[in-house]
Length: 221
View (cartoon, rainbow, N blue to C red):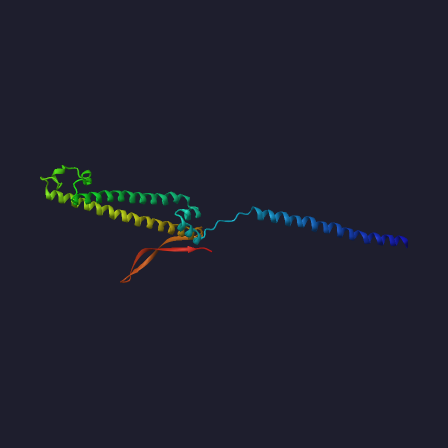
């Protein structure tokens, strides 16, 4: 009777020890360590993909030319943007300088002051042949030079104004370029898009059939 009781006590202890020690150790140590280590390591190593915002790129291009291209990561366009502005600014300066020179020469030629003779630096001819201050001048030749100076005044004024318009247009074009680049930044250019040229039969009046081509676009989902 005493031996039977001892055996019962041994059976009662063994299942409890297996259940508490083995099962709980696996649950608390192995399972939790996998969740903490693997899950957190994947979250830290992931990199966020850059997505260009259309409104932000447009506003940056409005604030300062070239910032929109930098935001869109189109760095190769920045030299083109500033080369265009540089050429137009040079054109403004060039035409403004020549406009002022010919305008001053025209004013000096038509006034009644002998000492104002800046036109002599532009007309490479004997001054006595066209200058009214000389008795032997030619009136027709003087009129020709006066018209030429007035024509150059109008010419440089025209291209000076066009250069200013060009600067404004180039500024708007740089903004539009930044806007379009941002809009098409995430455009799908994968193999799922396909453009095909397919031969077809074209029906013409009179029931005559001719060979032709049809262009189609296919999108694969």
